[in-house]
Length: 227
Image (cartoon, rainbow, N blue to C red; front, top):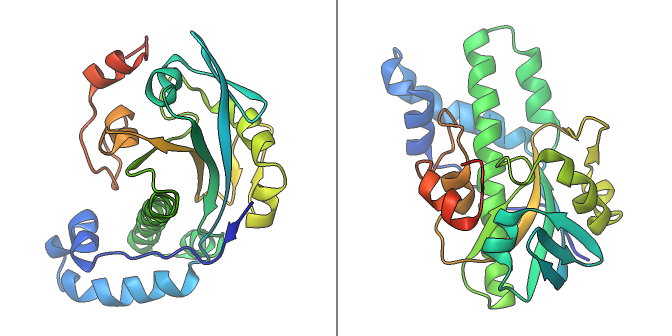
């Protein structure tokens, strides 16, 4: 079960200017380069993944690698797949800690946002790598807590499926289902024709890394009863 370290992270300067609205600040565009350099020096992106097979299906969810995942939405979207990739990914605590130490509130916001963007970029890179290596084509990701139908408590079977992998990647799960370091993401990757699946299923409209608008109709179609 492979550990990938480092995971490539590429942040586009134009996206940084847009998301942080640097063009609305005096001399803001010139700040993009130094901000990116600072963030890059603090990134420690690494990921662990496990290839697992879907062993059985029911109306309520899927059994994957001996672990049952209760979600009609997951069942509806990944139920036709033969295998999935369970993963956990982090950029490490360093950038987050730098944001906490920042005395200037705007600088703290910038570093926090860049950390979120870095997690998204690393997750996209991981998905592309696994899609290419597996020959499965486009892979979509779904994470516990993204939608109500697959709550954050599903981290428990997911981390159990990953075994010692999260620890090897430097990630631990607290009793409150929070991952430490905080700038981490976990979930399942599976073949899908849906573009930007997690973004279209997530109702958090203020997310700076959103790549597609929320799609309640897609959530209903895929089985999220509370969409």
